[in-house]
Amino acid sequence: MSKITIFDRSQFDRIVDQFSNSNDINKDLLYQIYLTTSEGIEELVNSNIISGIRNVNPIDILYYCLGEYTYTNLGYTKEQKESLVGNEKYITSIASVASDKYLSLSMFNHVERKLANKYIPPVSSLNLYLNFMLNILQSYKRNDPKTTLISDLLMKSVSISRCILGLITDGYETEAFSSWRTLHECECTLLLLDKYGDPLINRYLIHMQYGIVFKKEDREDEYGTRIFNDMKEEMKKYDLKSKDIKKYIEYGWLYEIPEFNNPEQYKLNFRDGLEKFAGLSAYASRYEMSSEIIHSTPMLIYSNKEYFYFVTLLSLYESFFRLEKVFMSLFAKNVSKEQMDRYIEMRNVYYSQLVNIHKREIANFKAWQNLKRESNDI
Image (tube, rainbow, N blue to C red):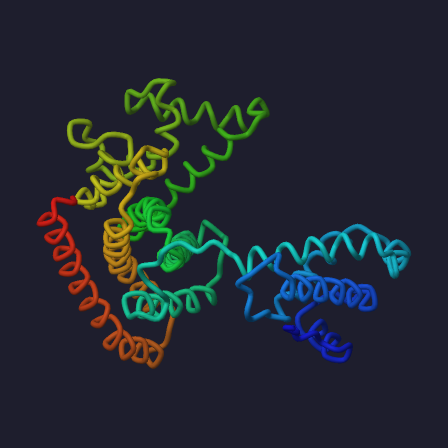
């Protein structure tokens, strides 16, 4: 007979106190739920109903019980919570759900085939650098677009980058690549705002306001009417019609740059406008491929994991190199010489490593492609 570890009351109380911020947990009731859940799982382990269970994690069991208890009791009064103590129907109900979730999500959780993990240098080195950037950006003033737009957009871009790494290590390569599409849009915007500075930032903020008013259900108030009238007058200067209003809101801020106002060369869209003017047209085909994935074409359903692993990782690295330049410029303006010297010292070690990793992964990708061609599998 296999016996799983069940915490005694003193151990249970210590764990709950350590990991729960709630002061109104009825520990007597929660311990009843925990015991019922643990004993039910132990019975299943020792039966022939479920096979293949070896190591049972008592901490996970307790956490599922705590989660179910906390969530189901939201809005209950103190008296209502106290009335549940000893209520076998309630205890059994919560314990049954906690048991199902533990067995399904901890013991029999579906896991994708993974091509990478968080420990290999292509992931861990980039993750280290992104983490460093986020910790620095976290200390900056935030969420005041008039003064913090660059740092806010940079922080969001770095956060998306870490999200992409997480999806890659979880085995979700196509989902990671579709997230890179968002990152690419962010970096194109960021590069131009950083390059042209306050005049373009101020114009971008005006279009941000246009977007807010456009999405409001009630646009007939005095402020909304004035904003729309201003926008229509502006659109006339560029020979734009009412049907162009959405793309003017999204990309019209680019007209603040005189060179952009060239209809033969640039269009009011992403691919032939923002991306092209940002100098990143080399990624147009990748962006288009990512768009196909987002719109659930067969490319999403029958994608090749290895191919999208390489394309996503390489695209992410290349986005990172551009973002890091913006970060270094921003960082240099806000720190002392001593802090900057420490950053440069760190950068000299890890940035060069990332450059070398990028080169190696390009070579690995080419080798993989050649192998596929030789086997007629590409």
